[in-house]
Image (cartoon, rainbow, N blue to C red; front, side, top):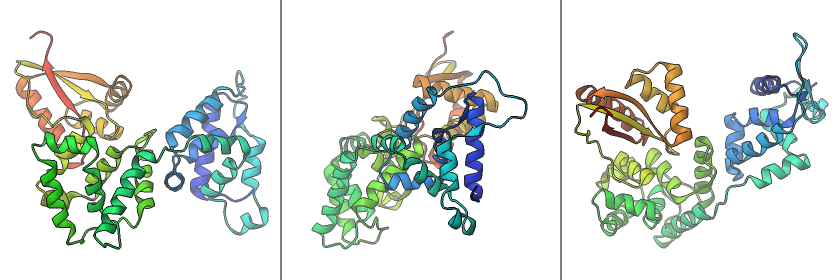
Length: 345
């Protein structure tokens, strides 16, 4: 057996544990690939290749559901590796004794088989929605004689995207005026470069994979650029970054108003851009939930789209909401929090 890098060895252990939990007869390639998809190096490589991790996982789950299972294992018995997994781990023995087998090499070996190659091929993002924005950003750079595509060029192109244009209007600003001021700023060409059109698409694919998105969209580019690169530019344009982010994600302006009631019911909403970890932290830090309770509420919000997470006296709710919203603003997490009169009111 070839030597494995530490991260690959851990992924194989996780795959064996999953196979055992599912009572499968052996560790299938799908078990190992699922474990490898959690590694940054694999996730990043798939993003560059335009592959959706969420779609790959869906295909793998369907494959795992059809695997034969056993009633029980002998105490201490290990789950056997399937022939394709053993072959991939064996690799070129001469080379593997010189250099350990890496996670990415293992992934490529497993997905090189015909059936797995078809799984990856079926799981590619449709890049057309964001490719148009990327091309428009490139055109904006070329029209001004700029050698590099900057984040400002991308923002200029995004002003034509309905989600972004409507978000700007929700903030009470005129899109034409914002475009004019941005054009003036582009004369300076001093911001961070995006290098080329393909890098913008890869950047968006990576962020989509990090959030588990199944498709690419212009608002995804907008969200990620607002979060990571456009702070100074938006400030210069008089657009509050978090407020714009919230309006892009939810299609409505941020409303911090507290419902007029003596007792208040607080609801949290699901979205594609607030991480599950952030929701759990909000529930723990702002609303006093224990960790297990917070995780259960987060899953309910994710599955049902929204959920009530508690009833509070009005002033208590005000203080808790202030903590929650400050947390979200500081971390650029556009979590939607609504309040309703509690049932007894």
